[in-house]
Every structure is written in structure tokens, then in C-alpha cells.
Length: 588
Image (cartoon, rainbow, N blue to C red; front, side, top):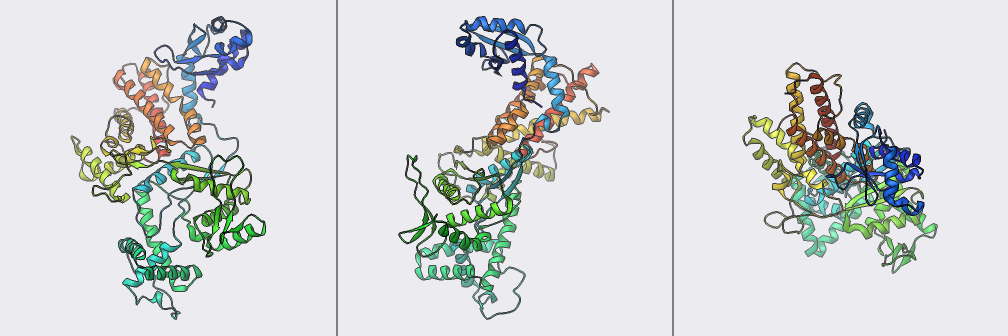
């Protein structure tokens, strides 16, 4: 199904052509003066020089051709040469009917379906998720869902930090607590226990303690580095213990991500490409891409057009150790071999911009990716507190993500219980759904690259540009439809009529923007466009609701038309919140 502005521009283009002008001048846009008209065309202004004619004369010629138009109920040529337009209710109805009958409300499938890998989450094993992880998870999950809805094949990868010194620190911390564990007996040849010798809570204590001790005690740090070496060299006991660390951590991470409706297709980590690194290093050396500089192996990535200094991309340190760069490049190499993606999107803090510029240039220069493969860095801003600084707990510490989620659920529960007849269990269930909407919409309604203030009072409000307001609108529609069914009505075979009042027409005009918005959100990886759309749609619906008798409408045909419009509005809103990663309860 063509977009509304394409359809209107075609009609306008025909009128320009019939009047003797270039059809390309008939581009229609949404009016920037809704008090005067619904749509506008400024083509007469652009055509004045080309045709050596006053813009108003061109506009008047075109307006004359549009008398009796099926698309426009009103066309005015206004000085100095604007065409002010109102869409015909019958023509709008045709578009609405088509939209309601087509899969995905008329969203056209892409000419070329892409295979996209989205790298988001970035959690570290043995460490709890904190508020700094929320943006990557929430934005990445939404982009994955939007791109899938738009017709692409999308793979989401958490890309765990599960290798390197942090693992050596955890293993050393475990050894200090339980030195007699069989994992540290290098002569042991039997099977290792299936149960982990620690809980997630103990793991989360071990890492920060070991990390702090390694900074003060050089001997302890040397032990941790030795443990890292043994792990990476394949010592049986260390590998077995590491697998326990991984399993216990991933189980907890799945639970925490799951509470935000975030799901990954791949739970790969840095360890997955450890064995690829020697092959990649040899390839880079043999093909003359990498050279030694001050003892380290590097690839020069600066370009003549650079206006700022872009340092070389380091592949190995002078002691032969690998870095994040090494792991990320080997991961790109593995992804190209296993999945052959058309695009890889990294959803990471925007302060990593220079790092990813180096990695992407290195991947291209060393031909780890095909020339047509797109590497995209989607850098996000910081979630800040009311003081404008990165969000902290009341005592100034870094807040765990599960605590933030719990506090938001508790706040939502209080609001749900106020003046509502609901059981304890139901209130908790509803609070959970609404809290997820509050957190995710509060984040996603901002352009990803911008910082934003986390304001729990505003985010959990049922009024204004918030997740709970959107859900409340959906629940209101569900309630009306349920009452109609309780009265013996059926939602099958409802037929739409042309809009009967201004607010009904305004709601339809918002609905027909759906495919334009969704395509733009996918192409620009921009969840905030979905948020802006559903906020406008919810406002249009609520205005329509307050100005229109629906169940009280006595004309049966008219009532059924109104209910058909409610069904379409509900379905579009539900589709939009689904791609944002949350859902609506049946009542609030």
C-alpha cells in the first residue's frame, strides 16, 4: 500500500500536468498550519522561475484542475502561491479500508530483505546489571523488533564480556574462599561436579572484592593474571569452573533481561572467538595490513580526509595480549563466516564513537567484511538523575538494574491501587506491565543519541507523553469493545463509513500515517519515531472519544463504523507497543 503523501502527491501531480506544468511539482506535505488546512503543496513557488510566471497564477491554474477532485474536498490557492488542501472524507475512507484489510496495515515489504545482526546488551559475566545497561538493552530490543516488523531477518546478540582478566579475578576470588575445590587440583582426572560451588549472590560479591584487592596488591593481581592464562590455555579445572560462572551468570541475566521483555537470539561472548584470534592475526600480518609499532601489533586506519587524529587500531599489545579491539574484530570475522550479514548494528554508549570508528575502519581495510556490508554505530546518550549527572542511588552508588525495575513496579503498584477495585494479585500483575511501559517508553521516546533525565514521577504518570498514558488509551478502547460484546454485539464484519465529525477525521488522518512512520523508524533505526506517532494517535483517539457518542449512538450502522475504527486504532497501537517491547493489560 502506498503512503498517504505518495497518494496525494500523485493526485496533485496529475493536476499540475493537466494544467501544463511538471508533475514533479505536485509534492504534498502535511500542513504546518493545521488551523488553515490539513495538507499543503508548495510546488507553484518552486515552478515560478522555471515557467517565468507568478506562483499564485500557477497555483490558481492547478486549483482549477482540482475542482471535483476525488482526493480533495477543498483546494485553495493562497498568496504568494501556496495550495492549501483538505482531504475528502470518502477518499480518506478508501485508504483506511485498504489499511484495515492489508497485512501489517499496508506496510510495504522491502525490495531487498536484509540480514541484520544487532549487537546490544553488552553485559559482563559475574557482574550484576546496573542502570547503565538499560539503554543498550531497551533500544537494541526495540530496533530488532522494528526491523523484523519491517520485513528483515534480524539476529540479536548479547555479546557477553566472559573472557579476560575479569574471569581470572573471579577464579582467584573463588580459590581464596574455597581453596580445596577440586577445580584447583591439576592432577584430578575425574568428572567435575554438575552443581556450581557458588550462587549468583556470592559471585557478585567475589568480583568487586577481587578487583579492589588486585589494585592494592601486586601479588594478588599476578595470581589473577596467572589464573587468566590457565583458563585461556585450556586447563581443565579452570575451564570447568569458568563454565559454572558462565551458567550461573547467564541464568540471572536471562531473568533480569526477561523482566524488561528483552530476548537475545545469541548468547555469544568474547570467549567464542578466542580460538579465531591467532588465525586473524596471521592473516593481517601475511597480507601486510598489520605492522609492529613500539612493540605492539597495529593497523593504521587514518585517512587523508581526516580532520581529527585517528590513532592506529591496536591488535596485540607488546606482551602479545589481545584487547577489546582484537575480540571485536574476530567477532566481525566470525559473524561474516557464519551469517553473512548485510548490516551489523552496534548499540553502545556514544562515548565509544572513536573506538568503533577505529574498529570499523580496520575491518574494512583488512577486508574482514564485504564492501557492501554496512557497519553501523548507534551511540546512545546517558540516563541522568535530576541533577543532570549519571543516575545514582540515594547514597551515590551505582544502582542495580533489578532495583530500578523493582522501585518502578512498587511506584506503579501504589498508583494502580488508588481508587481501583482490584485484587492484590491482579494489581501486582498490572503494575508489572505498566512499569515496563513506563521505563521503556521513558527511554525510547527520546532520540537515542541524546541524554535524558530519569524522572520516576513523570514516567509513571497516567497523563502526558508516557507509557502508562498510552496503555491507558489501549485499555479504554478494549473496555468499550468488551462492553459492546457484553451487550450481544459482534466485532466481525463491521463496516466503516466516512468520518462523521472533525475529531473522527483527525483520528483517521493519524492512522494513515502508520506505514510512513514504521518504514522511517526501521530505515533510521529510530524507536522515538514510533513513540511520537503513538502519542499523537492516543491524543487523537482521546479527543475523538470525548467528542463522540460510541456505544450510545442510536444509528446502528454508524455505531458499527465507530467500533470498526476503534478496532483498527487498538490494533495499530498494540502493534506499535509490541515493537517497542511492552504490552497492555486488559484493565488498569
